Length: 438
Image 1 (cartoon, rainbow, N blue to C red):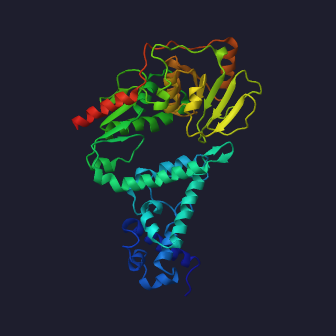
Image 2: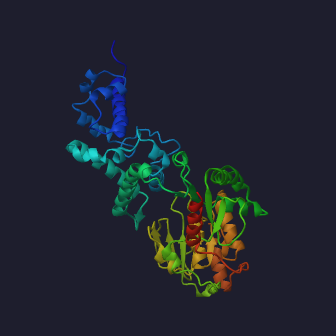
Image 3: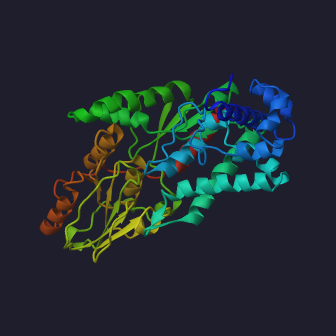
């Protein structure tokens, strides 16, 4: 009886999958053809009906999700949508995820097999190069500047992802860290199994506290708050030993595990921080440059600009057609210079963007992504602390123009007496103290 249609392809795929797991786990040299075929539930003799040699098979094993649409990774909870506009950031998160770190057998072969590739023949090296180029090509889609992909940057990110995972795999058990400092990492089992104290940098407790203080809350953020933000708070409370919560004010926390530290910003931003005793805004009529720092994801605000503008607007994060007083920069890896020369800022409600606007002391208009509880909280915080204003993508430009016309910051609230903006220093002290107690 003849085999059904597709049988040969299914058998070949089973052999490749068996070889992938064994090569990733033991290396090319230590795996025999007999072991590969046994892993696929087949006999040794059938191997040469599909491959001329183990090296020939090895070249096919090097495929992964960048080149083989049929390959399904087993990194639980990790998804990569290759059609998404922010596929680059998805790939980086997936590649450096704890799930990828722990799943050695289904690892990307560029991580597990680089030394084997260097010792192998031309076919294997060519396959490795193809996979690497495919990864770079995927990353390039999220790195468009002035209408052109940034290949050098994409190559650098790909190399850091691969090298970072190689180093992590090699050193996690050897270095035996005294403490692990994490930021938005949720696969903590390897650390907890080894008894390594975990210090998190996380704003979930702030989000919960500030959200519950708000008298009115949009209906469209409630489910996101309870099912995402509140669970994030509970996760950190129960699974971390200490949580550093960057916040501009020294206030009490909901749990002793959480410790308030000042806002955390890049060193280059801190060099241009507001003076401690200067909380004044420039007059609206003195505005010359307003920087719109918008999210580069599919959730980024889509803002329309009028033809005539009384000041220059520079837009970062989304593409567009520049004209006279309107300049689009696309995605930027380094935005410090733009932030430094901004007279006012418009940002989506991510905490890093809001924190750096605090530190710089620029008037800031926050346009929170609809339905996002944390961004709703961050926008309200900016407003309530007198550091800026809440806007929407449809009214932010009109708010700016109205304040420019009236030459006053309409609706600005009073400022607190002091702000804490050097959270990195106080956080280091808290972390060091926690380590001495562990």
